[in-house]
Length: 293
Image 1 (spheres, rainbow, N blue to C red):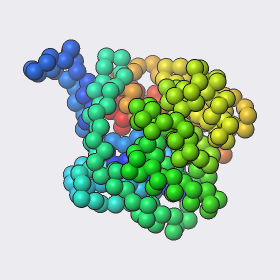
Image 2 (cartoon, one colour):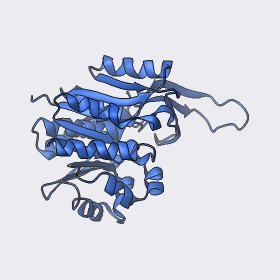
Image 3 (cartoon, rainbow, N blue to C red):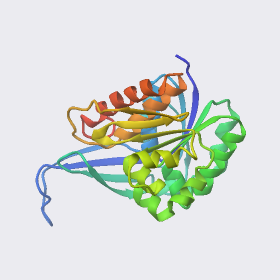
């Protein structure tokens, strides 16, 4: 095991996950399963990296509230160093409504995440580190696009390996794929789910999408839900099937998969072996309600 020092910039979120037991009753009560957890796509990614044995520092912005404390305590409990910038806005919250087949719709209040400052991020670069990851949510938010872009450029200048996760289709469309590609320029790894990859590339199928995206990134990983995952590294394609038997909730599954993949790759594993570990990580998450499994 080669433990790497990884700096991650991402959202600080409180997750409220709701799975109705029946059809939603307008203006009345609907029996549901509800879970309250720390959220943040990049935090799911960070925990997967920590489970792989790497030293992770998580950088973000939060409010002075209980949501931030829950977030920080949960990550510290997972062995992650937390460096949060406290601002005068409430911590972000997302409500995920999960349907009968485990798919979810998310209602998001980004809150303090939009106030993340570049100086706070670059302060983490004063200590030695091996890899830098920036969440797509940071790049997609117009208030923090320049923060993510500048931090990524600085990590590249320092000679560190880097990665970006697309994270969400709706804000990607609003930002426009060319603008996102420009913000993510120079990153070594690109992580996306299938819908995000098709939107970002402008292509109609996964093969064409990975062809297009591989022109701009050294290594591309596309998670495909029930169809497994694909990767291209150094011009070679890799494909694996899912190992999930039971799907309760897909929240956080892609983050766990890509975090496990990067953790294995930073440890020197071959891409195919890293993809297999990614599928194991994903299966653990989808079997329970909420991204923490």
